[in-house]
Image (cartoon, rainbow, N blue to C red):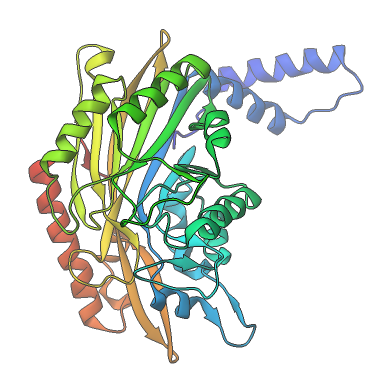
Length: 389
């Protein structure tokens, strides 16, 4: 995040301005601290810049559900899972993740047909996540009830979402999630390659990766919403593969052809390269993250035990949007037992790779280091203009 810096001259001008304002409005009191903060808000809005953090897969395996259950209260609580990573998730204007479970359908279940307690989404919200995309291969795991209940619960928690819809009228009314901030309007769209051969129940809609559908959606969004930027969050690729497949490459080019030049990928459950092509004009400035890996899951097979968050900054100049910077931060899932109870903690790799004493089991530290080494080697070789922060 940008730091707020003020010079002595600026402070004097602000004080003079607010003294004059107070003379004109004697009934309105304003402290110097309040006036400085308000002035900063105006200054930063004029900068026309927004930071967005993208997160990979929020999985909900049965071991995670059991770990979240409190036998004394008979309730679920996932807050501790996100406790240590919360500063990273909160360090952006908007934070967006891939919710790869349905919510609220009992009995709760993990793979192969996921349903997690609503407390999972509550904890995700409390950790700093603003938006969840819901089109993925598990969208229809619990049929009509699961798809619709997930939407209702996200709405009740005031979590933004897109990708699945109760019916056609809902999609036509809200074909994308709209981000409005700092004089910018950004549309987020979401698609999946499939739903594990479980079709949505009429009248439910899941956004599938279909060229006609994508083109039609983009045309409608440009006509009805006229955003400054459209970003696609896409469920694609082969699972557990470190490099994108031919279809992913082709789909990225297709999204570019319809004017969507930022594409974020999910589904492989492992990291794949991120590339930011800095062009000489706005039409050539494009960015793709083929897979951000698992953000939290019970998958312990290396290298499925970690992932990355991608932070980008968009800036608006002369009514054009460009990427100002793009960086990634590695994360790792620490599964451990304490006091006879299992826990899942999402750790910042940079914060804990230099702290082996934190781990009661040395093998856990070694696994974090192994994941970090693999991720850095892969991304340093294949990333383009996107570095670790």
